[in-house]
Length: 209
Image (tube, rainbow, N blue to C red):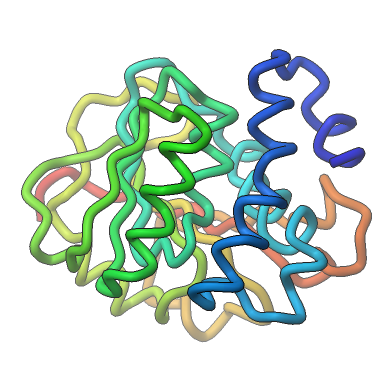
């Protein structure tokens, strides 16, 4: 929590309380349904919450923007981003029903009215979004196929509409087929060694392909 407060000093009292609640909520749910690896639950704020908020360092979302989180798992990066941007609409999807149940329960417990969670594949989603976020659910070429045609035409942010993807390691080969791609090293923002190889990949996408 200390690092979150340091990195995002303008949090409201409500946001601080919501971030603080995450540990108890996920510890409780993880005991019932394994949504986070056992070894990671002790590092929840670094490896899950702060990692998710790395997207915010690259792209601050505007009010009324729409963001889809594909393969959200237990709610990352969607839940932390929804706390940080209460006026942005987040749609969290995953194919595993029990994970979506946890996401919905956590969102309800936190009073997040800007979160909608559904058990669904990205290909089944009907609608368009300013940005699509995810945490390394697959390689980028396959991910692009899943979300093709789901980007809004209207541009309202500093970066072009498209994908914001959290991923680590050497991505040279995986991303070589894409022209409009930018990499942001999370080690530029966060000091913890966990972030040494972690990146946010921004891939601009046309609204219609």
